Image (tube, rainbow, N blue to C red):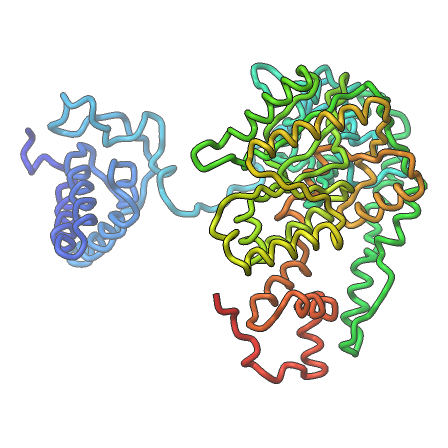
Length: 567
């Protein structure tokens, strides 16, 4: 091994070793790090000129460089020497002294051709404009999935009545003629990945973004609009220039939203009395109903399938027993004509869908089941989940809501108070909530009931057409009024929505409004009941309205009221 006199960086290694000795008592881990850095610097065979040059060595970081810099400044002051300047040079792969035969260990030098300057952890001055490298603008390949999506959205933007936001089904329907692949059938070896997933690439490139609403809709950014225009020109889509001007004028107009205008009026009011105004959504429904042109599924063109929530279990030890028994019962009774599947349902524990035989598109039928064991029913009544679940079933828009209750020999059944709550809840379901109630004694009977119900729906729909509401007309704010108006105007039609839209509309977390969150906050205050909270949020729907009213009328006089609910 070479002597110490031959080691060019022994002084720096000595300084780091001293720092390791000082940190040994207070921070043993830092001491080990410093010792490792000291060995790396000591064994390096090339003279290091500037402390930042040591960053290229294994185990050396900014903290070690800082220590070397401070020590080197002190040494230069004592020796009346100038602090060295950093020189950019290239390090070649040279093995540390004494470790020529240890090829498995990491080399202390960087790869050939990499500059130490690139390892320096500081902000360099920006280069001049002439030094910037031109980045080639991304463009999709002709007639691939991304090409079809962009051209379709650009062509839809050319329609005079088109909205800025476009739903997935409309884009797919238009994009199929500009693409050589299918957006609905699985692609390659994947069983569920389709060409629609190219939309994720578009969103990553800031070309096509979806609005955070339910159901999700998509629009083009300025960059995407320019790129899609060039692609549409290659596809010889007519009237692009005039359509571009008309559409951009509509987009850039930034007309105030009727919701925002109504909210501003409430902010400017000087009274804390609730202002009763006609809903903006209600005013839009009649015009939407006039324009709805449903897609009709003829009887016999679809099949009926049962969807069971994958979180529904028969017992803690048998999680798939309910689904397996239901599927086997269907196989025996229907001979394989009706199928059962498991999915994570947004609302309810079981529902039925119709699947088109040609396209495979799924729509939700007007029946949904909420399954409850008797002990779960008691606990849901106690913690108010019972009322929340009923409200979510009502907001789903499905007419036939079924409560499937499983009786069991539990402790709750033996208590008179619990029995009274159960009887009250059952009566409330049938009388007030207009729900069907079915009671079973075991989970196997529940599975048999679901199979029987599937067969009944299969017989009913043998001679029934379905009227599918296009996704473009569906918004969470107008969904229930629109569905009610369509059923009232066309009572002989069986109105349905696609499964994807239904799942998106009823997602528990995605549809929370400010009013909902505000109500939950108020409910946590001690002494606030459900009725009081309902009246409170009717008068003050948002925290801002409540705060402004409190400032104007000085209604907050008792701080002791705002105490958290004792749990």
